Length: 128
Image: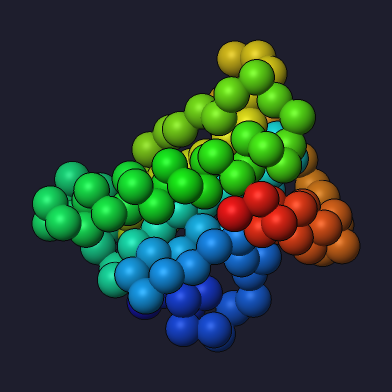
């Protein structure tokens, strides 16, 4: 069971931004920028391109909705999207508020407090 499946199951807390029966969006705890959000299918599948077509397109539509809320909530020029998939064997999309290309640098990690993450999640949820 991946760490993301444990979040879905409620075994590990997360700062949830949005949720449906099939998908979950929550804040990255080591973000590259404020508002960096992970979007996952709840069903554990390792590789994004192994998702069935319905789940894949549903994930992208859900990510689009979440991205629009992030863009309203966090001052940025746009929302970037990245799919890396090596760090956790559970398909996921990174939504990252961008003001420069450096904001996509996964080697640059912020260390926000739990209170800061909770406030950011609430601000994004207000724009859904």
